[in-house]
Image (cartoon, rainbow, N blue to C red; front, side, top):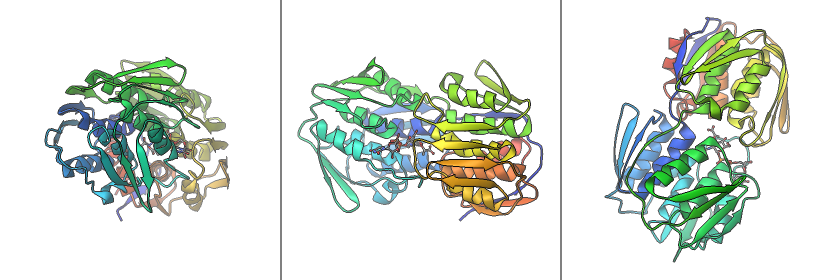
Length: 407
Ligand code: EPU
């Protein structure tokens, strides 16, 4: 288990270059199997991406990665036997079901891994597959899927789900007919995946609010694609501006970040944007009540980093997406935080945080502990930082460049 030590109280300011979106990159890398060669740029340097690429390599693909660009060649794809320990290690591995069932007639795969942030079933994925004509059998820790033909069909998701929307689009992209998904997720990462597939020759379009139609095609072509900026990484570093006074973020798409910027303004920050550069300048911090919801609502992935700002001014967070995404607050309380947790919400009273030893239990929560360490009095040790490296590219270097004292 790796840990880092932060000497709190140093002033942070300056510029951060935002990388490509993790939650676009993972499905797009998986979908690269649908053509012979794809060239993907703005790939984030994170361990989840490297693990996904390794999963592809084991089934016969080759890849070269350099300077945030990866070239994936799938012409050697020969096997449907997956490395199940890697599959169980990352969440995005479930996308291989929707992709590989286009290529092989059957597949056995472990349940996916990912952060422990509450119940994360995949029943919408599997029920949706069945409606497309795919046979699904669940065993103890494995899923078997098989098909004769993927027919297409009409699916209404009981609740908007990013993963299920993308997986069902993947499974439908070469179907015999037409698939319509109602109550689909409209997160920017879903849009990015659709842009990628359409560039390959897929026929996917929005036909109504949260209704997406996929007309099956017979072939998908080679493609070059740039992953969109990570709105969650940008929102996390925007917190530095709210905590310390000012930060500039490069390579940002603010159109994906409206709800995040609204909360920053409510918190008392001034926002300016020009040429993909977002500047956050804090005026006077104010108490805020944050509520997470599916896009265009405030993202669940940002409530943990934003909680650190609320330790200064107070407020509350209600998470309407995941039912157990507050374990970071137990750690922040060890640092003299005063956060009361009840079911799907927390209430935060302002306190001065003090350094101590804490443990990162999930990606965004882990990053919130690092942010807490930066404003705490004294020394904070954050254990298990591997979990942060899963989704925040080069985060230690980015923080050092802003002036953080990290050992
Ligand atoms: N849900 C079900 N059944 C399903 C699928 C989802 O009940 O079959 C429920 C979930 O339990 C949750 C809600 O539906 O209450 C939404 O979950 P969703 O499927 O949208 O989440 P996900 O696909 O598992 C992705 C991201 C998460 C992000 C969420 C919400 C990836 C690999 N993960 O997860 O990212 O929080 O969407 O936006 O894309 C992160 O980056 O730290 C992270 C956790």
